[in-house]
Length: 495
Image (cartoon, rainbow, N blue to C red; front, side, top):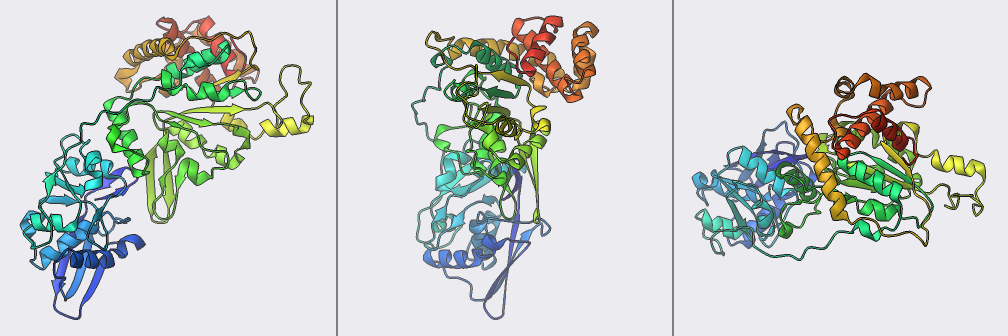
């Protein structure tokens, strides 16, 4: 098995042992780490107490046109070579899908991306999948997979009839372990900030992007960290997809089972473009936008990010996926996330209220916020001012109460949109929305377009907001008041 992005491909590992001077060649577009498998495999076989064929060995990874990377094929190469040498039963070996990196001492080491690889093997009709023992719990999360875990190459070889120093392969099932759940941050911790809380609830209900602008210490980060707590759990399909991305990135603990809660990613403002959208040598790895799929991507101190890094978000914000092209091919990762930006009003952060404490020159303030480009801001549905905290502020509603309203609004949207394949208002094309909304309700948006206060993209995004507000109120379609409130939220004025 090899992965191209999240797409798994079953690879036929063929081995040919012929007379001639001892040699070991791997063909079929292997990368550097895979080409080095010949040395790992030879040493692992010898360490397992099995004689290595002293002949000319050629291993072919089919299909030859597909680039292969990583050490996950080590185990399959070792078994294929020994099957060609008639050391193991070739017929029984053909029944297995084998995944694992080999150590020089014969141990089978864990590899990344086992979950999507096993899922692809099951889809291809594989009956049995052998994975490293360290990945067995993760592989067992795939429905319909007959997973067997192996800690050493000798374990697999004994099961295939070789005289190796190990016990036979034993099936490994996901352990039933109870884990203490850490309570997510609660909105009740945030005092005051009713306008920002309303914006957060609307964003959660419709899957909208959010910008919070306010002085340091006002609670922007606290609010952003509590957004996942009011989002509903992931369904089965999304849970598998999100877990697969984190498995490929090596950021998944299989002991916790499938990831059912929306993820929260908050990269530092020094992060590179590759860290945000994905990258790396060879086939690109997933970045923060993919790790935040079906969850929240939070950029604190957003103007401190380089403009070119921020502008790389424009494609995934529109398409819900990221396609990364490299010399060895293109990889496609999911990237449908909610973007939350937090920004201070100026470099010193004190230009709020009367602005008397601000030491920044007017040109410095303009330059600071201009780092958030117009095209990026046009894709942000909600902009809200977060005022400085006051002593008289009272605690607000807990996350549970807000989450219940969000769930009701999303259920109403799903009932309306499910026949078309959409789930929340933020996913609905503008053409559909314009046809479904009354002319009277759209009149205010058209006037904003005529006076240049709203772009065509902004029109559609404000209309999506209006539908979300209607869902929160429990009405069938938005009216004039919902559109006016949507315009206020989009233009940064608390309704």
